[in-house]
Every structure is written in C-alpha cells, then in structure tokens.
Image (tube, rainbow, N blue to C red; front, side, top):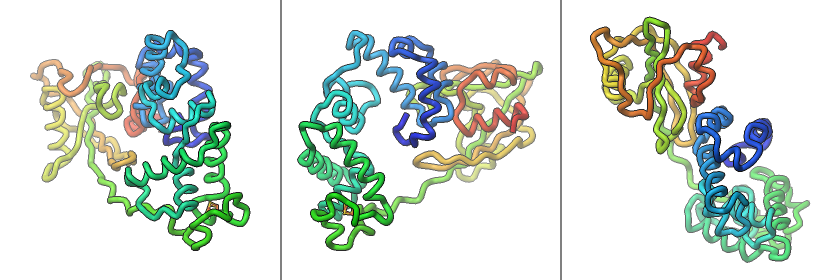
Length: 321
Ligand code: SF4
C-alpha cells in the first residue's frame, strides 16, 4: 500500500484491509472483485492484484509461510528490489541495502553524484554505494536510519546540514551543491487525453458496465464503455465508434452528463460522459474489448469496484455529488 502512497493516506485502508482479509489464506482465496473493492480509492490497482497473487504464491509455493530469504521474497509477485531489501533487512536482518527516493538524495549529495538519478546506470551506482555503506550487523536499523535521515534532515529543500551526522564527509555540503543535487533531468510534458464514455440505459433503467481485462491498466475494475477521442473526431463520433468497436452495436448519443478531470502517473484525462441508447434493431452487446459486460440497476453501482474518474461519475449518477 505504501508504494506511491503516503502513510497517512494508506493507514485507514490498511486497517480495513486486514479486518477484511486477516490472514494470507483469507486473501489468497478471496474473490478478486472483493480485493479490488477493498482497495478502491488507493489507486495503482496492480498492487492489489499483485498482493493477492503473492498471497496465493505464499500458500501454494511456500506452504503458507512467508519466505525468509531475499530470493524467496523477491520471487513474490509485485515485489521488486526495494521492497525485497526493506522486508528482508527489517523483518529478517538480512544484509540488503534499501534504495528509495530518500536514500537516493542522501547518497547523491554525500558522494557528490552529478549524473541524472532517473537513469538506470546512476541508480545502480547508488545501489552499489548503499551496499558498501550498509552495516551488515544491523541492516534493518541502518536502512531505516538512512531513509529517516533523508526524510527529516537531508530534505529536498533546505537540508539541515548543521545538524547532520555525516556532514563532515558530505561532498554537496562542502561544495555548496545541496540545491542542485540530486540532479534530475526535466520531465517530458505529460500527455492529456480526451476520453468519452457512454452511460447506456435500457427500458428497465439498467446501465451497461464493462469489466476491464486483468492484463490491462486498471484490470479487474468496472467502467462505462468508451475510449479515447482520436484526432479529427468529435466526441460524439468517437463515442459512436468506440461503442461499435467495444460492444458491436450502434448507439445514439444523448445529453452530455459531465466532464471529469483525472491525473494518472504518466498522463492526464478528461472523461466526457454521455447518456446513450442502443439503437432498437441492434443485437445484444458483446464484450469485444472487455472481459465481461453487465446490465445493472443504479443502486448496484456501489457494489462494483470502479477506477476513480468512473467512480466520480457513478456518485453523480446516484445523486451523491
Ligand atoms: S550534510 Fe547536508 S546534504 Fe549532506 S547528507 Fe547531510 S543533510 Fe544531506
């Protein structure tokens, strides 16, 4: 939960999640839908899917006992070098150095590394230096101390060098480069996509929702069918095309319901939602781009996990916003 998310944001989710799935076995055998529901609002849903897959691995491959070696831990789905080093050093006292954003800042300043820290080569160099510095007797304490130093003393702006226990060995302090290190190359402009979605209703007032495929971004979550507006298309044209491609039916586009802005890590979207009707002579919609389609009554919207922008739309449809 703490990958990409602050402690204060994740804490209530953590407690609710543990109450809902108290043991690794409970999590392993839970329905995917329920795990995603418990995660809803935290974002980065691949973490929830990976966590459940890892729980299944612990049950199937490690006899239900969490692995106590670095190789065993890193073999779990969703666990990379950072988490494996943190868990193996803090929980099991194994000598693996953690490198997160705080550690990168401390080490690049301490050793005066002026290369772009976004590059793999620079990260590898920092990992090697962290490995060399690691106290093999107390790796967990060492890792937490360096992370804490970065969070409280060697802060991104105005580091408190006068209070720093390593200032006498610090290159950036000596050369007055704390403002320019760590160096990060300027980010590319984040693309912004116009997305159109259709709220198709039938004569019983039910709405059509689609389940995103597991291997796609936001996989396992429900959404209103739709897609990206291509160049030269109006939003209405894009919606007609998307629903023809995704559902295999012709629709008529009605009133615009709302416009919702949302930012993901690598792009931004504006979600334009429209009322829709499937033309009377059309066959039953088919899940051509999704895993499953479902007609549901408005009150059932709250029992299905949706990504954030779609969730805002469901709240609006339910008159709750
Ligand atoms: S002396 Fe300053 S720049 Fe260097 S590690 Fe300490 S706080 Fe960071």
